[in-house]
Image 1 (cartoon, rainbow, N blue to C red):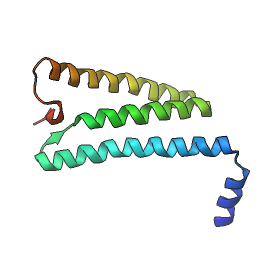
Image 2: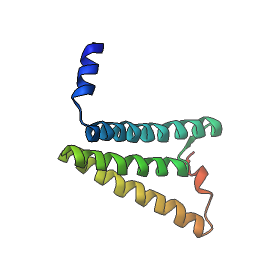
Image 3: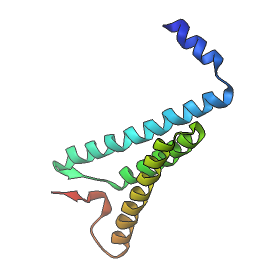
Length: 111
């Protein structure tokens, strides 16, 4: 198995390896949004969606969209593109609510 992994690695161009790195980094950003949400919810003992969740969502979504474009995957492009609209809209709600004197966006969630 190690030989197959080495052979795969050696058969890739530098650009392909960079894009694989971007894909893994984007997936790590996506994973971190759930880790942040889980920790915030555990601390509050209720479901919480912190602002950082939306920033990780946008960061991961932008990079995964770029990755899917580079890979030429229209299904992945559609999914990430639609997700980005939702993430930006939710972040807009959080920031608009804060600007208008609403509750702290970091504690927004369902009781």
